[in-house]
Length: 118
Image (tube, rainbow, N blue to C red; front, side, top):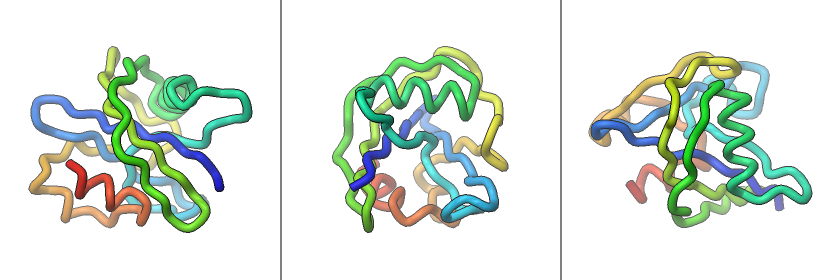
């Protein structure tokens, strides 16, 4: 099982969604940003590293949400506070969405249960 972390970032009632790059698994679909936990790395440290790599910003990792199991992935979502404004480094696009707008996007399968938690 591959352990993956993702950041659920909420600001002023909107959540940050990022569009996966083409050429990657589920390319073009939307997700909460994050990535794989490396060997010997804590989930929190992995999330800080991944968000820095993908969005070039510092974060404060908050409460862990309920994990999602999808195929061979264990996705561990965390509530996260951004310290700086994000910039796209890897994703195709990003959007700040209200809960009522979640259905407008084509989400990666593993992220759909997280939407339901919110």
